[in-house]
Amino acid sequence: MKLRTFLMIAAVVALVYAVALLLLPEFMATTYGMGTSASEILLARLFGTELLVLGLLYWLGRDLTGDNARAMITASVVGNAVGVVVSLMGTLNGAMNSMGWSAVAVYLLIGLGFAYFQFMAPARKERGRRRRRA
Image (cartoon, rainbow, N blue to C red; front, side):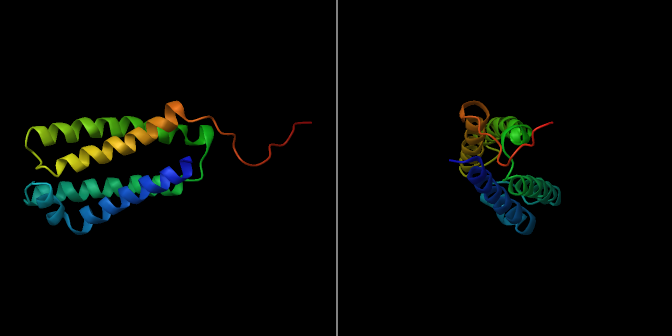
C-alpha cells in the first residue's frame, strides 16, 4: 500500500469519528458505555476537535513523501501507541464497555500502518526533478 492511500484511509477514519463526536457526543458516549454529564460531553467534543485536526492533517498531507512525511509518521506512531495503551486500560478497567475494544483495534491498526511506513517500507524517492547546481 502506498503512503498516500494509507493517509487517506487514516484521514477518513479520524474525520468520521470527529464528526460523530462533535455532532452526536451523547450517542458516542453511551455507545462506549460512558456518561453524558455536561463535562463528559465537553470532553467528547474536545476529543472530536482533535480528531478533526488529525484527519485534516492526514488528508492535506497525503501527497507528502520521504523526509517530508517523516515527522507526521513518527508522531502518529507514538500517538497511536499511546492510544492503544489508554483505550486498552479504559476497556479493561470498565471505564468503557465492550465497544472499547473497537477503540483498541482502531488505534492498533492505524498505529501498525504508521509503524510499517516508519520502520519497514522501502524508501521512496520524491517525485519531480531536482535542478543541478551549476
